[in-house]
Length: 301
Image (cartoon, rainbow, N blue to C red; front, side, top):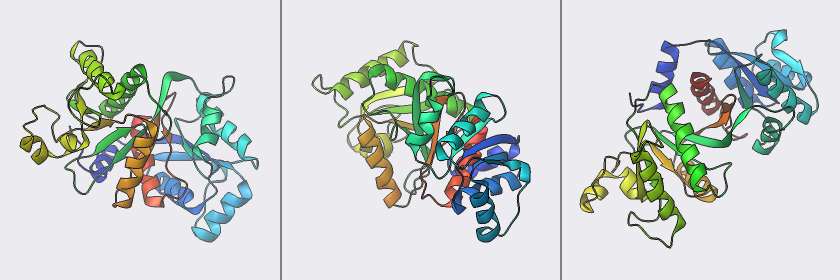
Protein backbone atom coordinates (compact mmCIF):
# COMPACT_ATOMS: atom_id res chain seq x y z
CA UNK A 1 0.00 0.00 0.00
CA UNK A 2 1.09 3.57 -0.76
CA UNK A 3 -0.73 6.42 0.94
CA UNK A 4 -1.47 9.35 -1.36
CA UNK A 5 -3.14 11.76 1.07
CA UNK A 6 -3.50 12.37 4.80
CA UNK A 7 -7.24 11.77 4.49
CA UNK A 8 -6.52 8.34 3.03
CA UNK A 9 -4.31 7.59 6.03
CA UNK A 10 -7.06 8.73 8.42
CA UNK A 11 -9.59 6.47 6.66
CA UNK A 12 -7.16 3.58 7.14
CA UNK A 13 -6.83 4.49 10.82
CA UNK A 14 -10.60 4.65 11.18
CA UNK A 15 -11.02 1.20 9.63
CA UNK A 16 -8.72 -0.41 12.19
CA UNK A 17 -9.48 1.98 15.03
CA UNK A 18 -8.32 1.02 18.51
CA UNK A 19 -8.69 3.63 21.22
CA UNK A 20 -5.24 4.52 22.59
CA UNK A 21 -4.40 6.47 25.73
CA UNK A 22 -2.72 9.77 24.88
CA UNK A 23 -0.67 11.64 27.49
CA UNK A 24 -0.51 15.38 26.73
CA UNK A 25 2.10 17.61 28.36
CA UNK A 26 0.82 21.12 29.18
CA UNK A 27 -2.28 21.29 26.93
CA UNK A 28 -2.99 24.90 27.83
CA UNK A 29 -4.00 26.34 24.45
CA UNK A 30 -7.24 26.09 22.45
CA UNK A 31 -5.73 24.42 19.37
CA UNK A 32 -4.18 21.54 21.28
CA UNK A 33 -7.30 20.92 23.35
CA UNK A 34 -9.60 21.17 20.34
CA UNK A 35 -7.52 18.60 18.46
CA UNK A 36 -7.25 16.21 21.40
CA UNK A 37 -10.94 16.38 22.26
CA UNK A 38 -11.92 15.81 18.63
CA UNK A 39 -9.70 12.71 18.50
CA UNK A 40 -11.30 11.56 21.76
CA UNK A 41 -14.83 12.21 20.47
CA UNK A 42 -14.11 10.17 17.34
CA UNK A 43 -12.78 7.23 19.33
CA UNK A 44 -9.07 7.40 18.52
CA UNK A 45 -7.81 8.31 21.99
CA UNK A 46 -8.58 8.59 25.65
CA UNK A 47 -6.69 11.73 26.74
CA UNK A 48 -4.78 12.36 29.94
CA UNK A 49 -4.25 16.12 30.13
CA UNK A 50 -1.30 17.00 32.37
CA UNK A 51 -1.09 20.69 33.23
CA UNK A 52 -2.74 23.55 35.07
CA UNK A 53 -6.28 22.28 35.74
CA UNK A 54 -7.77 25.78 36.05
CA UNK A 55 -6.34 26.91 32.69
CA UNK A 56 -7.38 23.69 30.94
CA UNK A 57 -10.96 23.83 32.23
CA UNK A 58 -11.22 27.55 31.44
CA UNK A 59 -10.21 26.97 27.81
CA UNK A 60 -12.53 23.97 27.48
CA UNK A 61 -15.46 25.93 28.86
CA UNK A 62 -14.90 29.44 27.47
CA UNK A 63 -13.12 28.80 24.16
CA UNK A 64 -14.39 25.37 23.13
CA UNK A 65 -17.84 25.60 24.76
CA UNK A 66 -17.80 22.00 25.91
CA UNK A 67 -17.12 19.79 28.91
CA UNK A 68 -14.64 17.02 29.63
CA UNK A 69 -14.35 14.10 32.00
CA UNK A 70 -12.83 15.14 35.32
CA UNK A 71 -10.58 12.07 35.33
CA UNK A 72 -8.91 13.24 32.13
CA UNK A 73 -7.17 16.18 33.87
CA UNK A 74 -4.06 15.72 36.00
CA UNK A 75 -3.27 18.96 37.82
CA UNK A 76 0.38 20.05 37.51
CA UNK A 77 0.85 23.81 37.56
CA UNK A 78 4.63 23.71 37.05
CA UNK A 79 5.48 23.09 33.37
CA UNK A 80 8.57 21.01 34.09
CA UNK A 81 6.66 18.81 36.51
CA UNK A 82 3.85 18.46 33.99
CA UNK A 83 6.26 17.28 31.29
CA UNK A 84 7.81 14.79 33.71
CA UNK A 85 4.40 13.44 34.73
CA UNK A 86 3.22 13.14 31.12
CA UNK A 87 6.32 11.08 30.33
CA UNK A 88 5.90 9.00 33.49
CA UNK A 89 2.40 7.97 32.39
CA UNK A 90 3.90 6.38 29.28
CA UNK A 91 6.87 4.92 31.12
CA UNK A 92 4.59 3.27 33.68
CA UNK A 93 2.28 1.79 31.05
CA UNK A 94 -0.67 4.10 31.79
CA UNK A 95 -0.54 5.78 28.35
CA UNK A 96 0.30 4.52 24.87
CA UNK A 97 1.81 7.67 23.36
CA UNK A 98 2.80 11.22 24.12
CA UNK A 99 2.06 14.73 22.83
CA UNK A 100 3.60 18.09 23.57
CA UNK A 101 1.14 20.91 24.09
CA UNK A 102 2.08 24.47 25.04
CA UNK A 103 5.76 23.72 25.60
CA UNK A 104 8.66 23.66 23.18
CA UNK A 105 10.35 20.57 21.84
CA UNK A 106 13.42 20.98 24.06
CA UNK A 107 11.23 20.89 27.19
CA UNK A 108 9.46 17.66 26.30
CA UNK A 109 12.67 16.03 25.08
CA UNK A 110 14.42 16.91 28.35
CA UNK A 111 11.79 14.83 30.14
CA UNK A 112 11.86 12.03 27.55
CA UNK A 113 15.67 11.70 27.67
CA UNK A 114 16.07 12.01 31.44
CA UNK A 115 18.42 9.15 32.34
CA UNK A 116 16.61 8.29 35.57
CA UNK A 117 12.96 9.05 34.84
CA UNK A 118 12.67 9.29 31.04
CA UNK A 119 11.57 6.80 28.41
CA UNK A 120 13.54 3.82 27.12
CA UNK A 121 14.78 4.67 23.64
CA UNK A 122 16.91 3.57 20.71
CA UNK A 123 20.40 4.94 20.11
CA UNK A 124 18.78 7.52 17.85
CA UNK A 125 15.57 9.51 18.23
CA UNK A 126 14.46 11.28 15.07
CA UNK A 127 11.81 13.77 14.02
CA UNK A 128 9.81 12.42 11.08
CA UNK A 129 7.77 14.84 8.99
CA UNK A 130 4.87 13.52 6.93
CA UNK A 131 3.44 15.85 4.35
CA UNK A 132 0.93 16.03 1.55
CA UNK A 133 2.24 18.26 -1.23
CA UNK A 134 -0.12 19.76 -3.85
CA UNK A 135 2.47 19.10 -6.58
CA UNK A 136 3.40 15.53 -5.58
CA UNK A 137 1.46 12.35 -6.24
CA UNK A 138 1.72 10.74 -2.78
CA UNK A 139 2.68 11.40 0.83
CA UNK A 140 6.30 12.34 1.44
CA UNK A 141 8.18 11.41 4.62
CA UNK A 142 11.42 13.17 5.52
CA UNK A 143 13.92 13.46 8.37
CA UNK A 144 15.47 15.09 10.21
CA UNK A 145 14.42 18.71 10.53
CA UNK A 146 14.23 19.02 14.29
CA UNK A 147 16.58 16.89 16.37
CA UNK A 148 19.73 15.49 14.73
CA UNK A 149 22.02 18.37 13.80
CA UNK A 150 24.73 16.70 11.68
CA UNK A 151 23.78 13.03 11.30
CA UNK A 152 26.62 10.55 10.90
CA UNK A 153 26.46 7.61 8.51
CA UNK A 154 25.30 5.36 11.35
CA UNK A 155 22.64 7.87 12.37
CA UNK A 156 21.34 8.15 8.80
CA UNK A 157 21.09 4.36 8.66
CA UNK A 158 19.17 4.42 11.97
CA UNK A 159 16.85 7.13 10.61
CA UNK A 160 16.03 5.00 7.59
CA UNK A 161 15.27 1.97 9.78
CA UNK A 162 13.02 4.01 12.09
CA UNK A 163 11.10 5.61 9.22
CA UNK A 164 10.71 2.33 7.34
CA UNK A 165 9.48 0.58 10.49
CA UNK A 166 6.92 3.37 11.04
CA UNK A 167 5.74 3.14 7.45
CA UNK A 168 5.33 -0.63 7.70
CA UNK A 169 3.08 0.00 10.71
CA UNK A 170 1.03 2.33 8.50
CA UNK A 171 0.56 -0.48 5.97
CA UNK A 172 3.40 0.09 3.50
CA UNK A 173 5.13 -2.93 1.95
CA UNK A 174 8.84 -3.60 1.42
CA UNK A 175 9.25 -1.35 -1.62
CA UNK A 176 9.49 1.97 0.20
CA UNK A 177 11.68 4.27 -1.90
CA UNK A 178 14.27 6.20 0.10
CA UNK A 179 16.31 9.04 -1.41
CA UNK A 180 19.53 10.20 0.26
CA UNK A 181 19.39 13.89 -0.57
CA UNK A 182 22.51 15.56 -1.94
CA UNK A 183 23.31 18.55 -4.14
CA UNK A 184 23.77 16.34 -7.19
CA UNK A 185 23.36 12.75 -8.28
CA UNK A 186 27.00 12.35 -9.27
CA UNK A 187 29.38 10.99 -6.64
CA UNK A 188 31.94 13.38 -5.17
CA UNK A 189 34.51 12.11 -2.67
CA UNK A 190 34.93 15.72 -1.44
CA UNK A 191 31.32 15.90 -0.20
CA UNK A 192 30.64 13.82 2.91
CA UNK A 193 26.90 13.60 2.16
CA UNK A 194 27.75 12.03 -1.19
CA UNK A 195 30.11 9.54 0.42
CA UNK A 196 27.44 8.61 2.98
CA UNK A 197 24.82 8.18 0.26
CA UNK A 198 26.91 5.67 -1.64
CA UNK A 199 27.58 3.73 1.56
CA UNK A 200 23.90 3.70 2.55
CA UNK A 201 22.98 2.38 -0.89
CA UNK A 202 25.58 -0.39 -0.45
CA UNK A 203 24.20 -1.24 3.01
CA UNK A 204 20.73 -1.58 1.51
CA UNK A 205 21.97 -3.67 -1.40
CA UNK A 206 23.83 -6.04 0.94
CA UNK A 207 20.95 -6.45 3.42
CA UNK A 208 22.15 -4.23 6.27
CA UNK A 209 19.17 -1.91 5.69
CA UNK A 210 16.02 -3.81 4.74
CA UNK A 211 12.38 -3.25 3.87
CA UNK A 212 13.08 -0.49 1.37
CA UNK A 213 15.01 0.63 -1.73
CA UNK A 214 17.74 3.16 -1.00
CA UNK A 215 19.00 5.51 -3.73
CA UNK A 216 21.76 8.05 -3.44
CA UNK A 217 23.26 10.42 -3.97
CA UNK A 218 20.15 11.99 -5.47
CA UNK A 219 19.16 15.63 -5.97
CA UNK A 220 15.76 16.96 -4.94
CA UNK A 221 14.47 17.44 -8.49
CA UNK A 222 15.46 13.92 -9.57
CA UNK A 223 13.87 12.48 -6.44
CA UNK A 224 10.50 14.15 -6.98
CA UNK A 225 10.10 15.14 -10.65
CA UNK A 226 9.79 12.30 -13.19
CA UNK A 227 10.10 14.69 -16.15
CA UNK A 228 13.47 15.96 -14.89
CA UNK A 229 14.67 12.39 -14.38
CA UNK A 230 13.65 11.52 -17.94
CA UNK A 231 15.29 14.64 -19.37
CA UNK A 232 18.55 13.83 -17.56
CA UNK A 233 18.23 10.13 -18.48
CA UNK A 234 18.51 9.26 -14.80
CA UNK A 235 17.46 5.66 -14.27
CA UNK A 236 16.45 4.45 -10.82
CA UNK A 237 13.36 2.90 -9.20
CA UNK A 238 13.32 6.04 -7.04
CA UNK A 239 13.49 8.58 -9.88
CA UNK A 240 10.63 11.05 -9.45
CA UNK A 241 8.92 8.67 -7.03
CA UNK A 242 10.56 8.72 -3.58
CA UNK A 243 8.52 8.02 -0.47
CA UNK A 244 11.24 9.20 1.90
CA UNK A 245 13.94 11.88 1.84
CA UNK A 246 16.87 11.69 4.25
CA UNK A 247 18.13 15.23 4.74
CA UNK A 248 21.88 15.87 4.97
CA UNK A 249 21.55 17.93 8.17
CA UNK A 250 19.05 19.64 10.45
CA UNK A 251 19.27 23.04 8.77
CA UNK A 252 18.41 21.59 5.36
CA UNK A 253 15.51 19.64 6.83
CA UNK A 254 14.21 22.64 8.75
CA UNK A 255 14.48 25.01 5.78
CA UNK A 256 12.77 22.46 3.51
CA UNK A 257 9.95 22.03 6.03
CA UNK A 258 9.47 25.77 6.48
CA UNK A 259 9.63 26.33 2.72
CA UNK A 260 6.88 23.85 1.89
CA UNK A 261 4.78 25.27 4.73
CA UNK A 262 5.02 28.70 3.11
CA UNK A 263 3.84 27.10 -0.14
CA UNK A 264 0.76 25.63 1.49
CA UNK A 265 1.86 22.25 2.85
CA UNK A 266 1.29 21.24 6.47
CA UNK A 267 3.91 18.72 7.65
CA UNK A 268 2.84 16.41 10.44
CA UNK A 269 5.63 15.94 13.00
CA UNK A 270 6.10 12.66 14.88
CA UNK A 271 9.20 11.80 16.91
CA UNK A 272 10.18 8.12 16.82
CA UNK A 273 12.86 6.06 18.47
CA UNK A 274 11.56 6.34 22.03
CA UNK A 275 9.27 3.83 23.75
CA UNK A 276 6.31 5.49 22.03
CA UNK A 277 5.62 7.93 19.19
CA UNK A 278 5.59 11.56 20.26
CA UNK A 279 3.25 14.06 18.60
CA UNK A 280 5.47 17.06 18.01
CA UNK A 281 3.98 19.83 15.88
CA UNK A 282 4.52 23.55 16.23
CA UNK A 283 2.82 25.21 19.18
CA UNK A 284 1.25 27.64 16.71
CA UNK A 285 -0.11 24.91 14.40
CA UNK A 286 -3.87 24.88 13.76
CA UNK A 287 -6.12 22.37 15.50
CA UNK A 288 -6.77 20.47 12.26
CA UNK A 289 -3.08 19.73 11.76
CA UNK A 290 -2.67 18.63 15.37
CA UNK A 291 -5.71 16.37 15.07
CA UNK A 292 -4.34 14.69 11.95
CA UNK A 293 -0.99 14.16 13.63
CA UNK A 294 -2.65 12.57 16.66
CA UNK A 295 -4.54 10.14 14.42
CA UNK A 296 -1.40 9.21 12.48
CA UNK A 297 0.58 8.73 15.69
CA UNK A 298 -2.18 6.56 17.15
CA UNK A 299 -1.56 4.13 14.27
CA UNK A 300 2.08 3.84 15.35
CA UNK A 301 1.42 3.47 19.09
